[in-house]
Length: 341
Image (cartoon, rainbow, N blue to C red):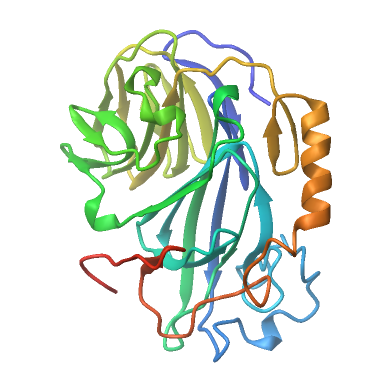
């Protein structure tokens, strides 16, 4: 929960953990950061490092990493999304992806996957330990963005934006990766037509900011009806107004111009902005729909049809060892980045 309300540019503060609280139009954020070792022939950790874990539900950071719901390769086997969007950004590491539409791929190292799941949608997201000659650390941020009621039930859309195509603003001692929205007149493309972010009037912004020691970052003013939150995930002793803060910390900010003075170590921030959707909805687990009745119906559908709607042979499918980044859509189209690892 947020702390007490403050005066000045920082309205409220909250400590961060694995899952981050957000404000409308966002639902929540997951931040996965693990020091995975060298991979074996199965792109998995050595057996000696996964013994004794609660495999299938492993959220303890043992030997520097978690297996999450994976039992061989870490990650998240088949699971549903329904009624919202998922924006996934692995700054480090790969994600292998297969879904109920028949799409598949591997992305990572700064790429962005954007999924708009207005209707029933399933996928797996596995974290392959692709390298057997060096460790496989990952740093994955997954942002859940709600959909308005009019777009609940819309056909799912899946797209990948390669890191080489993501705009970056270069400031004096800092840079801003523009995943969504506009920063200092540089605009990022929203790939899916069914998205709250597709309408510029909703002012949805998703920005990853990296700063050198002592850098001054100026956040431009935005309309007063926009929610603005800064997630300070690496660094110490930043100064905003007359106050200082250490990571990991969530800071709710006013909408005026704000100057952030980084501390004496490199800093990493996520900035999330957006106009609230402001509609009453119900949610449970992976579902966000109109009301409790629709949520119960959706849960029942998932329970009955989860496996019959899955077109792949296993529920935790990964790409073969040695695979580079790509996406292959269900209609046979393929896309590749301009550069590979």
